[in-house]
Length: 143
View 1 (cartoon, one colour):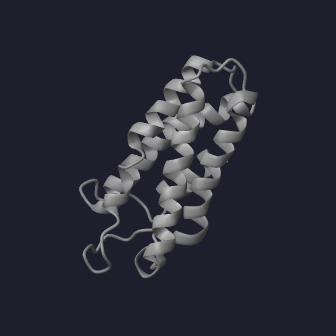
View 2 (tube, one colour):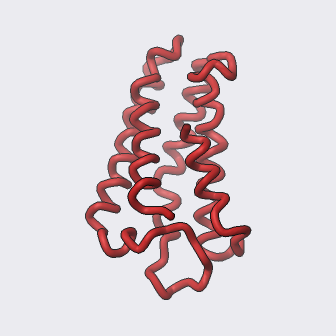
């Protein structure tokens, strides 16, 4: 599910100028996908579960957790079409809450994986929280 949401976000509006805020944001979300897709595959039985690999991908998400937010320019600061709704700027408290929820869920997932992961059941709930964090932004703040 996370992969579908990420693909939807990066696929909106055609190719972006890679030097634009939209292009940079899309590049970060593609990196998110690089980590989240294998994790989802392991939890969805599309890939064999590998606890070390899952943990490495969780660390990868944690390394990127701050990256995309700076690439949401104020309205009028960029002529690049993007999928962000005006609520990103008109509801800054809601936007910040969604970002904080995502950050927190990634931190919780990493905390679990750092204890050692042997089964998918150990990470299913914290990964579901990460996916919900993604969903909250997608549902309230993107076209």
